[in-house]
Length: 141
Image 1 (cartoon, rainbow, N blue to C red):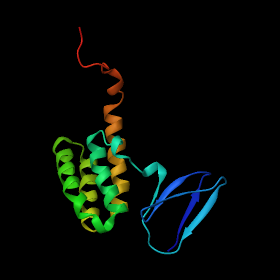
Image 2: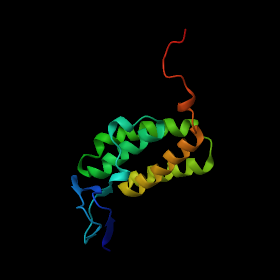
Image 3: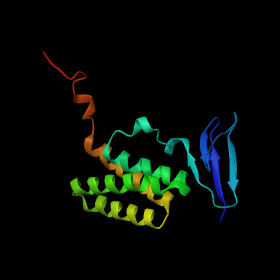
Image 4: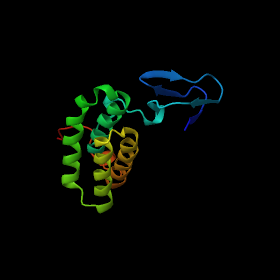
């Protein structure tokens, strides 16, 4: 089944490892066969990996984008998911973690990635504005 992407002007996406950017008008791209595609909004840069859920999302994203080298990201994923599951008590979130693991084991990386996004949303909701309430400096006089 073809994948149809509606692209905003200037929107970037990754297609089988290549960064592609849409022109200055809205565009539609139809992919007729299986390909690894990730929109700009779903791409996480290494410096954005700042929370436990993002430490799960990032290696899953890399496995999806670089499937031939997935094994080099798997250990990081497994370690971080285990740590996350060790501190979370929400049954729905734990079920999502198990589903993420099953998808990764089945090499269904995109499905795992979209569920990992739910972990980020859960974590952001739980942490709220914690970071804005912390002092900027380490030492206080």
